[in-house]
Length: 393
Image: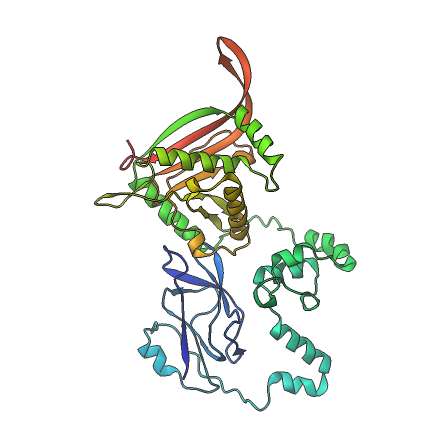
């Protein structure tokens, strides 16, 4: 019997997923662990697998269109099987155009027809059919001119992932043509405005931060912090550990310990009540091409600096490579936004719901200050705490 593949709930704020790419087309034979589509959510672009074997009979929408959570993405079954009843009884969107069942003859496939005259093309097609590689790996391979069929993957089930390509040797021919490719693909000034379609992430950023800014009464607290001793401590720690502690790791740990002392800040506005959280989960804002995502360091107050550093490094890498999972970017109780590495002195940030506060971190700058009536130079970092006045006084 045919199986309905539904749009999964991939984040706590997700209402629909946009099909960023279909990797299979109607009539294709699919396996349970095949990636049939890349789905763009409000947080990241994620791969969707059907978890059933069969023939792809139906695609709910075309690339670039959205499917509501639990809506019908696809239908998989036996070749020629009638699936029309499923569209009516399984809660499908009646406005979605129905693709007629595709009759696939099991006895002879397209690949087998080609095999009669072109065995090399057949081998290449078969190799590509069974090639396991992430979409990011495929993109990087195309850009570098690498042949994925000659590589071994370190991912699940031998899947080729980004780190496999980071150490791969770029063919000389590919390196030679790279400058030409770059030069010919630079955007031209046409004198016309460009309308850029909104990603799901950008839509949700606009919606949630507008709601936060205009529904939560913000106020701001600023302070300049002397970082000289923190700089010395970080240097001493990094001399004795393999993992290198960043200044952001120090800020995460300091915030976690401060929240333990001041639990009223570790709270959320719930409409009819304020929820004071029992755990301290620190979110760190990370910029990606589509917008911002906030990976979460869970139980940050209970972790050492090296543990925080390892968690932060792993999560940020996953976020930037679109591999972060829903449980890794939800559940924050406090957020940090650090632009110090971008040479920003200070700034204000919009509270990130459901948090009551967000800390904006600027760069560390040698600054003349007065100490015991003497002008001395200190390493100063400027911090701005944005607070939701409904929770914090």
